[in-house]
Length: 265
Image (cartoon, rainbow, N blue to C red; front, side, top):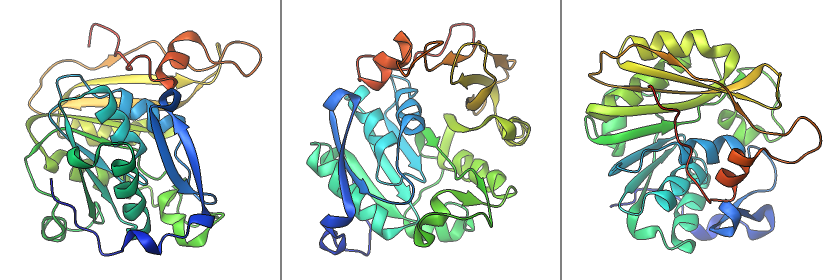
């Protein structure tokens, strides 16, 4: 799978980076010390990809954690990592290579909210991918970021979420599955965008502790499906007290299991 990025790997300064273990050490990831840093959302997103996926698109991939997580769980899959920031693209390429996934990974520098002809010119093909995953920026545009140059990784206008969903649906083939992780408060906008383009929509709330309101949601839908929507019981990340993870998310974060969507969807 080809790679298209304008910035050489050497331009990323090592002293600005940290090396972090994901999936219990199965992945070793270089990422910037400051600004947006991949974490639980990225791992849950990558672990939610079905095991029969062949071609995966990770939109807004950052340094590649979600897409590389998916490849770790689905050995037969290939992934395209699409990211607007050339610096992040360079790190995503390096992370794929250093984890032995370079041959199954492509990276393109592209604004996924750009007009379709611009996305196509950058290498983001239409009607191709089996699964499209995305963790769109979730802070309102105009709020402060620790690193101004990477603010777009965390901030966007509310209206741009529709653009992300449209781009994801366009990139997927006629039966593609689209999966996004996002803030729970944006669920109405997510459902509006998904419902206009696909069916079989499933919502998995993600709550920090038992009895707490969900702060995140995983939403997936399938193009061409007419199945009714399903609202699942929440995935609870931590035990009632302390900092320990509950058994299921702990196993996911250690790379010992995928995120199995509850049956009935």
